[in-house]
Length: 640
Image (cartoon, rainbow, N blue to C red; front, top):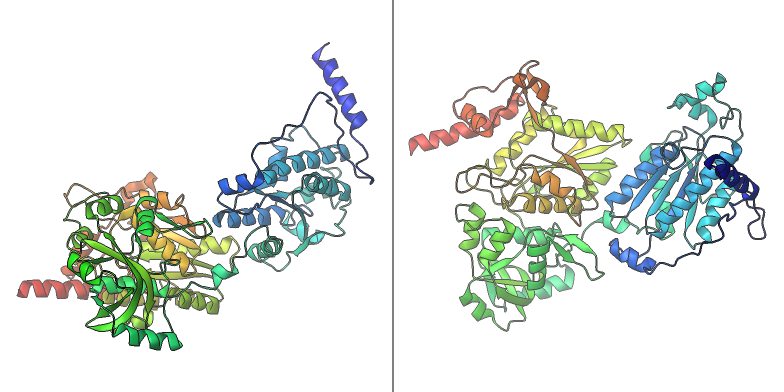
């Protein structure tokens, strides 16, 4: 038999059995043609698939977006896909045009081909859903019977199916005409175009109707998110948005704990220890309940995560520990609780203390990749106690430093409320420990522009300089805050959509390991977008032969690091001084001779010498703040 004749026989058989009765209704479906096939049962249950995807709940389902061309189906579906994936929920979008360039490239737009197009897509969506993925299908699918076929394909396999009607009026879709199809249909170039020469059958009872007129993509997408939350497909994230648990105690518990602390054995805290108490008590390290016990310490050290009681993972890339001497450990042996003091005054109680060896070389080798006393934080670890103590922390009151900057030390919950008060629908964080030049500002401005173009109405910048311990040659916190305020006052950054606050963590200079910690803390504070710079948390190698860490690795790692699902990582774009226009601009390698890379060393040299940087490098008043600081330092050195 020739190939042509065989194909004709198959085609005849297909047409003959294309329409069939399904159940007791009149729903069309494709009849089974081949008779020598037997369904093979999987050995893997849906529950096992879910656990493999990092969830205890099966989330496999299909959301079917239907509506006219240009209604916004794909825009909403793909925005939802990005949202779900950012939360660690597997999702995949199937778009009509994409499918017709691959799987269904042999189908046209006749009524029969439209039916077969939808049937095939529904079968593919069913496979996605059965694997535990939330499948997002955006198809005009104008015929009610075809959409019902898609539904039955899922319900017969006990898979959730949600029909979402994107209700955008024809005149609005035609005004958008993003693909130019309506104009062609009006001109007679396209026959049978839905809404013009072919009727669209509106859904009679969809699970959701989304009206897009006068609403952003984000607002429309949130309608679908709320539907999926209400149906238990995805977890409600309201609790995560509402805040983090702080470790402060109040009322009768506080009074009782203060009285108890006076009778307890004590651990006197160093300044570094106190900074970590602040970090823990305010919820930056949530869900940690105190200084790490040994199991938590080992998880953080070797896995960069800690495991919650429900089996889920939370990113925790750095140990948060309290070192003590062997002598103090012996004195505290057997104590059910210990008072943590500063200057002899109790600040907190550590309950159920657990002592374990402080294996310093192992800790440093895992956290920093080296064990070298020339690294400033490693030196502090080497000089600290040989034991670590962990336990549940109860803190009496907010840690205050009384340096004139406490008003900038907003807790994660206070920041979340601040963003809410500003009406923020996106928060993007820029973490830095250096003064802001116009290249940094350009990156922040460009991020805001991108978010607005994506449909966000009020993106807010969290300008979040690090406020804990830093090495001696870093610019002091009070100088950086003054410089940042000058940048805002000059309008380089919009003060109405920027929150300037202090991140209380010590700086560890642990490269890609530490940058996960920085990102996790900003996520706890409500940020959902995070700008990653070049060589974040890095420094020169103590041996003096180049950088300690690859400058690219921080940004690369954050994109795949576990437990950071609430953050979208925005890669750093290199900016330099463009001599052709006299301002900072994104580097263009095709005309690299036009760009001047002004290093930190060169910047400090100009400031110390009282010289001005190239015009447009930094806001003038912000430069004056920096210049005054470096000149005062030079004067002190000359005097000494």
